[in-house]
Length: 201
Image 1: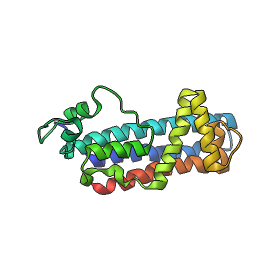
Image 2: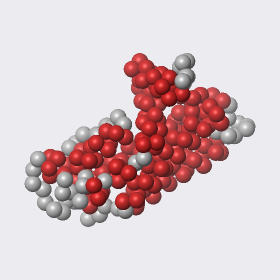
Image 3: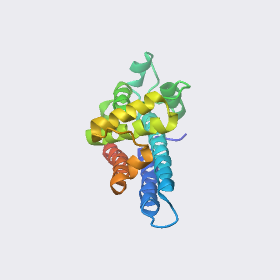
């Protein structure tokens, strides 16, 4: 039976982040072959992929942490549970045949607090500055994924509140502005979150 392995979770996630860090350096800064439109497409597609990796990482981390200590899970679901739960059972109880869609790091932290004891709750360690940047990345991701008026409005609000931008910009241009600094900051925030979370291991 597979056991929880938090180190493996972090190694997998950080390997993906390192790949994209290098990928951006090679492609976004390329002087030939790729035009500006191509680079914007790469930036947007890559952000979508990074957010998907984060979601997968969060799900795996929740399951593994519950497997390490499921004492709070019984309280959460309102029933007596065995002390030793398999990973498959932890996943089944946590997700109950549905996908947990967290709209923000704050929602992840709130959920983790309900199902994990403090000593095995890595999500509580995500620093505020990383949380804010990850949330920004997901506002962009939602617009790219849905292209809805509500997602566009939310992105416009973020531009105004965080960057004092009055005019709407498609995410590719926004991410690549200032020599791709924003895109690099988002990748860095995922790294920071993972490194801080790993401190419970």
